[in-house]
Structures are given as C-alpha cells and as structure tokens.
Image (cartoon, rainbow, N blue to C red; front, top):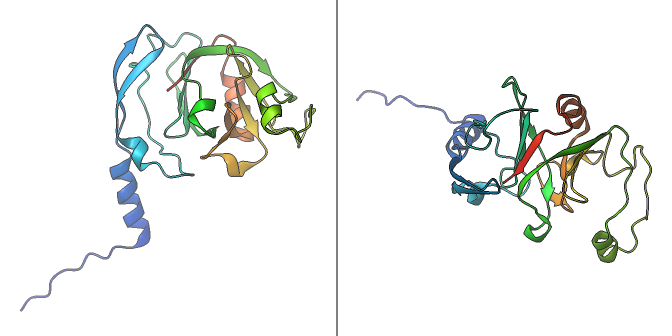
Length: 199
C-alpha cells in the first residue's frame, strides 16, 4: 500500500490562506450624485473587532480624476487609501468611529493642513465625558498626534495618534486616526483641496 503524501498545515499557512479568502475586493456599482456609493460586499461580516482587512482598490470607480490626489476611507475595513495625482498609491491602517451615529460618510476635501494640532473636545464629546479637559496643546498628550488634515465637515479630521492600540479598531469619536508616522507621510503628500471620500 503506497504512502499517502502529507501536506503539513501550520498556523502561518492557515492564516495566510484564510486572509486571502476573506479579502475579496469590494465592487463599486454606482456613484449617485457624488455622495452615495452602493456597494456589493459581504466583507463587513468578516471584519473582526481590531483587524484591518487590507486590500488594494482601484480609484476609478470612486473618483472621476485624481486632480490634487484622492483619499478614500473604508470604514468597514478600517483602512485609508491614498492616490497621488500621478497614480502612486498608499494604503494605511486606521482607526474609525466607535459607532454608526458618530460615523459620517460621503464626499469632503482637505481644507487645512495642521502641522502641530491642538485639541478641544466637541460640545457632544464634553457632554458625554465632562471630566475631559477643555484644551490639550500640541505635544505627546495630544489626542490628534503629530499632524492633522482638517476636512470641510466641522470637527472632522484625519489625524495621528500616540495611542497605537486604537489603530485597526472602532475607537474614535468621528475622526479617522493613523499611526503618527503614517499621518506625517500623508501630510506631506496630500494638499489643501485633496478629495476625500468616506464609505
């Protein structure tokens, strides 16, 4: 009787295979009036509490052009995608809002690049957390990290964080957080006027 060949399965190969199966691309079906995107995907049911589902995306279904670059934040996969005007691409893990009622989706743009962000809680944050300070200056205790990109929506930013445990989690009060080294890179690449889409 011939020996049956064995195919050893270790933890690394099992996880790699599982990730490949889960990370199927999201397909954009329609862009309606520049604010709503209908998506066909069951990926959100596979995203775990603190894991970003990294997958590259093609910009063309989401933006008509790359003038001034383009940022797409995928709330479900907890990832920020950035395309330069020349098509160069970056992918960053991110933190996203804690709950759907804190989440804003749609089109906006970068209106101001803040090289030394300071922080004040919004009125609703202060109402939920009255013990929070009224103001935190730039520095290592600042919740906005080392850089911030202000969006056209009041109080919304893409910013860094000193608390790296937040990245890949639902952990923010509405903003999109990146590792400090990633926001510093994105800060240099993005411009005032860069298009931003949160889906």
